Amino acid sequence: MLNKVIISGGGTGGHIFPALAIADAIKAYNPQAEILFVGANGRMEMEKVPQAGYRIEGLNITGIQRSLSFSNLLFPFRLLHSLLKARSIVKQFKPQVVVGTGGFASGPTLFAASGLNIPTVIQEQNSIPGITNSRLAKRAIKVCVAYPGLEKYFSPTKIVMTGNPVRKVIEHNTYAKSDALQVFGLNPEKKTVFVYGGSQGALAVNQGVLNALNLWKNNNIQVIWQTGKSFFPKAQQAVLESGAENIRVFAFIENMPAAYACSDLVVCRAGAISISEICVSGLPSVLVPLPTAAEDHQTKNAQALVQAGAAVLLSNQDAPTAMGSNVLDMIDNPELLKALAQGAQKLAVKDSANKIVDVLKEIVH
Image (cartoon, rainbow, N blue to C red; front, side, top):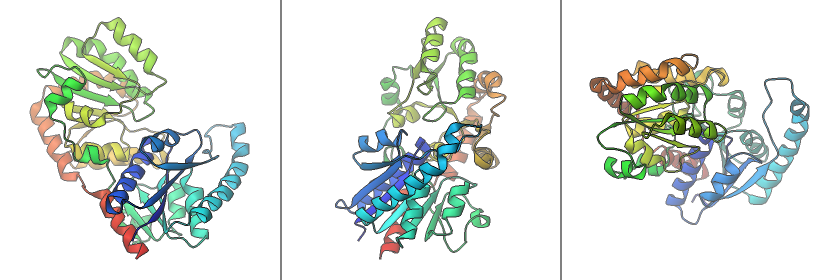
């Protein structure tokens, strides 16, 4: 029986939401299971995980900055402290298995667990793994992946194709479109575009919306726009000044099922979890890859959908100027939207969290 599990992952929604989906699937299998999360202090998991009803411990770990920074000089000391604390947490909690979904805390936690001979499992969301997961995989029992072709990065005997875990409320979305439109106060007679740049926002995506406000306003396109916390005041002011009554702007959207149910088209980054959510929702999309993502994996993620006829790729460089007209052209082309939606549905992998739980159960047994 799967009774005690540590899950480590965070930093962004792309690492946190799969971790929560796995935890929920464990609880569905065994309501008495004890689950402990390990995250990074100051990151969003320290807020989102307790909100979901789970306990979390924080490590004082950060990433290495790309630019010269005093923080980089402190990194070795933070890493050592985090390794020691992670080892203490694992020894005290005594899990049967430890799962890592990526993020700053995942490395020290899985390293500590494997050093204590506790089996570890990696959940790799992307088509190209980062350096941390590539190294941790050598110690892991299994690697749960969402894309084919990862044998060049991981041992073929360890790979299990599970897909990316998607939150149950999104995978089994119960919103009718009419009800979802009412949640946002939108008009059922107009086409709706849902634009978001991930949990923290995306500058190029946000700039694209700013430049498209008047175009979309004059063409009766209504928009749900998640900006991220830092860009929200500027976006709110721009919408107010434009007089656009068809734009709903939010720093962060909690009710993602309603937002997806509203949507005729989604515009977002090409993070693996966003893509998985779009596919299980069966929605057409414009993907704007983050060019600085490790190994340019977001571009590879987006290209996989484009090749399958499931999405349109818009470069980060072109997004600020081309997004408005691209979206307008697509919204006016129902045949294209239908074809992209069908392509997305074909790529959807459902029940991923339960498949990962099956892997955990097999390891524990």
